[in-house]
Image (cartoon, rainbow, N blue to C red):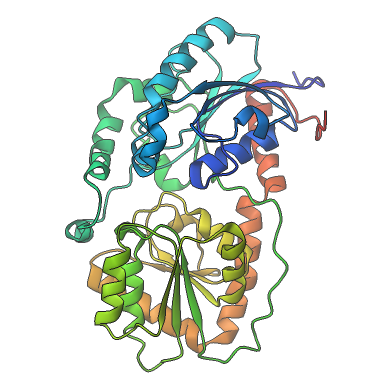
Length: 414
């Protein structure tokens, strides 16, 4: 039965930081928006040096546990492996056993961590919970395995994700006990196909507050095309492939590539640019502020993001929202986010074939301003459809209603 009262939602949102990027930022956005429509209690982690989630999400009741101080000294390891999670899991599970008995909350929603390798503290307690959006466990395409020469050793631990997903009873219970699993893309649902999932929904974790003002790009010279990459400069993001593809456009000398981001593959990418005679056509900007990145989107003509192991790709939404056609890998999240109308999806087979087909897509867009314009318009619509919060809220509210009989009660400013 539908209730007119303000529904009670318990969020398990271990990573929640509006000052960060990626998963933590998405956790913050979900918690912030949901707490404006429901009576939200949130379980989370306070990391050293961060603004407390209890301050960042003022409309929610927040229970936060401090992470060990040494965690902040290893940010990449912290984000990738999450060594703090077992402690959070233990504390959250203890709290759930004591406070989350049936009736205390209409629904529990486990949001972060989003990677499918982490069991939920809700599993096995007889609770009504949703988990997701979940993503990850993407393996490196076979032809690229030998190219991960700059990847830190600890990143290879991800190689056991598929095995754990098949064999770990805690993960099986996490997904089979849930009333619904939200997957960021169809590939994630396929990863869970062997489980007895009660209900699957497809919903990206990305939230867009509003669409950008349209950028007029038609006045720019036909072949004076600026390709833009935004992201971590690590091997799997495909910056090397973007540089090698640009080298195949020597007959379009005004085509340039701007790389915004930092990472362990930076020096290799710079060396590749020098080796291919592209030093004057590839600009490495390093890490940029949010304001600077937004300006880069406005100045660019095409977003080039050949990441070949991308669970979702927040930057794809940022680029489409800004009206940029996209060239991305036909693998993982981008396969579903990018359509034929919004850009080019490049098959991932071997590095050589990948570069050749990226270059072909770059050439088409460099030579066809009308195609760029049509993909720009379609991309804005696609970003709004998948990411604009008012559209996403309608879908999440329906899921909450179906499972718990609660409705969003309008924005709270209390």
